[in-house]
Length: 146
Picture 1 (tube, rainbow, N blue to C red):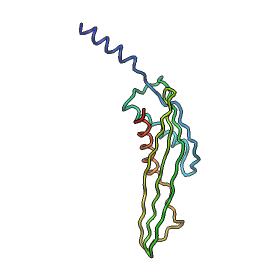
Picture 2: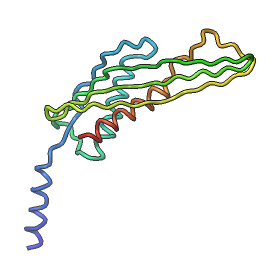
Picture 3: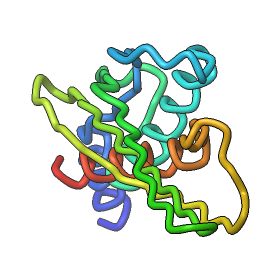
């Protein structure tokens, strides 16, 4: 009886579908980043996040990830010798799983405060850490909706 129960559980577990990130596309041209490294990083983050709720396997059902937009507007305030520059990096993604589309967005903020310092172009440079943080949040947002 015990063996029959274990066999039944194993059979039920084998019917649970597994997935694989088969394609990562970006609809955004970001010259600050190497496209190949970004795509590889996105695949890793998506697989890690999805593995918390779904099984990942080599021959699994396909999951397609698209980076829809990357926005990073900068705002600056200067009062005399004091200045403050902020950049909000927002990443929007689209994940397709089993024919359904799940959209997610993530936001990360960077701020620089300075006294008697002149920023060269009043813009903060593109920050890879902020991008990665916003990307992770957008992926978590999309996976949460699955």
